[in-house]
Length: 619
Image 1: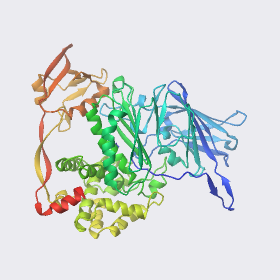
Image 2: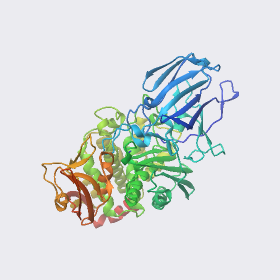
Image 3: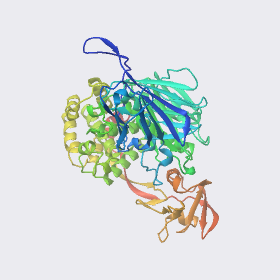
Image 4: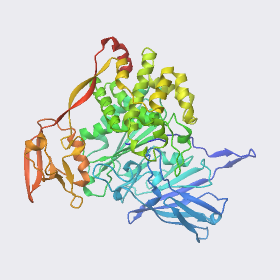
């Protein structure tokens, strides 16, 4: 997930040309991370800094990282930071905020050390997958088993040091643990890995996951793909998940055609054992230019997990288009502690999410009906949010209220903005071009190393397309007018209809039939509440405690799993529920009786627009 922005590749540079036209070696910031000597669930980090030119410097961990759109303060997980001279003498260090340490007598400093706590086992989830720090952007430290090493959690940067300075990272690890990453290991030994990047921004975009080797590799049209899985109880493997991943990523590459921004791409999948209580609880993914970090519940059945991965990973993979290839100066020069956000989340996240759905109908992975159903769902979700808020204003201010609460709309209305633009371009070009063609033109105009000015993008897009596109931006993206989706659907012969769809048996109109006791962590059915057919058919009553469903135990820690899995239940399927009533446990067996809701949907009804519709969906 949920849900990311900076996705940029940079060329590793070892030499620069100085003002006197003399070549000199660029100093490195060297980091050693020792995951052999974990103590008290903390990893030791040693920094060898460049030679400082000032008496005082600041060492900083990020407050925010690209793609999270939240202030997470990763410096809170750093303990006992100290700085030393070459004689081993400690110099004065003062922590001045959550993420910043002031180092005095900096010219004498040759070494900095500290300990890093992980985030997974301290997450205070609400039971529904929401946590303080989005798990795919966090870290895990489990001695001898797994290290999720999102580099921004372990390594910081210095003030007054060039953004272009190289980083050299040495990781000392047990021979039994293998590091899955898109970076190239420069050390051939089994216990030491060495990686280099040309700047901090590149380092942040390269996560590593250490665990017992469980991975597959394959190549798609010149792109090497790595799928690495950590499943603590061995429920899932890379081999079991790869066939569907390969099918999906092959379809994506076919859809993108000439877009080929990276030669290697890694999918790092961490499966959380939520039943143990101190594991990751925030499910979703965080994209990077050459990788995606995924966190999902391990207890999820393979078919459901594969389906979730298809949607989640496909979204993250499409970020190679934007913002990897096409992005503004706010993205290119991201400030990790005082970020200025771009106003174009409609493109970075919205168009990306639209592609993640469009490619599936385009490549035959879903039906036309399923595609319309997805877009209909996004329309309904967008209407639940502030549909009159300027999208560009929300984007530029997304870290602050009231705009922060509207962030999820980038995946709903943002995708619909992409859809409407696609339809406009298809209509005006008689089906010959669409939004993918537009993104190719923008890629040719800008590219990974040439950012655009935020306030110039709409004019450039209008120049590449049609005046109607510019009018759409002015009215519906910059402006506060809700989008009349039926008008745009009508252009391709699609009409709104009413359909019946299955609802979640545990929730009605956003009101849950179940609740959780925060002390005992038990899930119980809300008393004195009119229950639906699902509960009535099984003879369940208000006050009953749900202990297990189909032999899977549930409580506060994994209630989110239960909700997700229930979405895949079929009507009249056999079900077994273990409950506790009046202090006594009992087993209830029966059939699932799903609830059905009336919902707005869409279908193609105008045969005269079939050719344009086919160009839109299949072109």
